[in-house]
Length: 426
Image (cartoon, rainbow, N blue to C red; front, side):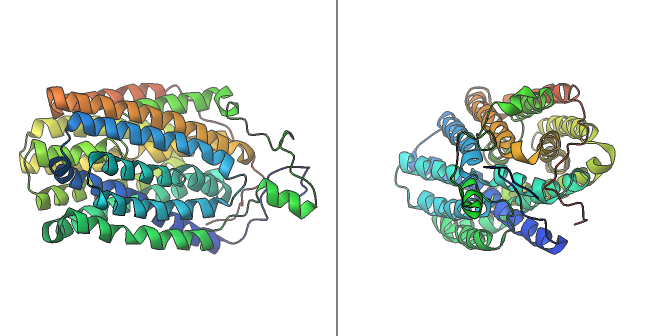
């Protein structure tokens, strides 16, 4: 492939085995990100009692943490032009692990919140850069499955963590549990930094290979964050995800459902962990199935069906009112549906963009949708504090319905040519 001056490009794609190994590794770092998020709702009741803060304060902390996370995701369209994406992901995974240790050491709410926010900064590279890497590795016809594997890998961390954390917290306390669960992040981060495939050279390295100076004013080197927003399809994807952020994600479902089980329905720690795990099993299987079907039947029908299923599941959770069989049934359906929208929308976004614009597109996407998620976190915290959990769940249902209406307006993109994508099967 011939490069023009200053162009960011990819090396010639390699074999399917390297893609599969790399996909497994970044799915593991994604699992660590979700493990960090999954243990937090389980230790929040203990931290709230020990450090003296309420649901409104928790909602504000979650809002700030999500906002910081979203804003930091935006910077990785720039950092990835100067550093290998795998290096950034690896360092971020190490930082996520260290954040748990910081939360365990905290003696005040400010220290606890600071450690939590540090973890969100560290985790900010995972989504935009992993999605950018996968978009380079796989052609559109296979992208849905790859994105869903990565997403389900993350949710795998959410499945394993509650049971492990429940046992650790019960027998060793919440501080020691955080120390134990920080170790996988350190290991996965080092593995990712050295073994994930990243064929794209940075501006600086590509220029050095040509014996040329980096020219930040060259059109191929300029980073235009506004370019993705000129595409109406991308704008609608961002709108739909911003609305849906009120009912899913690390700061909503994975926080308020466990809190509802423990503080609203007064289940024990072990029962809460078991029920949370039941929900998260569906969050692994559902996205993988939805991703595979979306490659065959299109993204839009699967997104709308999933959001409608999440609405039904949340209504069922409200109506169950602490009846354990009803709660279990509602959580199973919620797990199988509520997590499908996010990876499918991200795949939709990748389908709309070429590789040279993809980092900017994902950066803008995550900044705006995480900012929306931050606002939703604050709103839901206030709703729970003032009106109870059912009011928050009704708000979540409204977000699913409105997001479905926005999704129906998105036009399915045509084939976006991408010379950097390998056409060989995974």
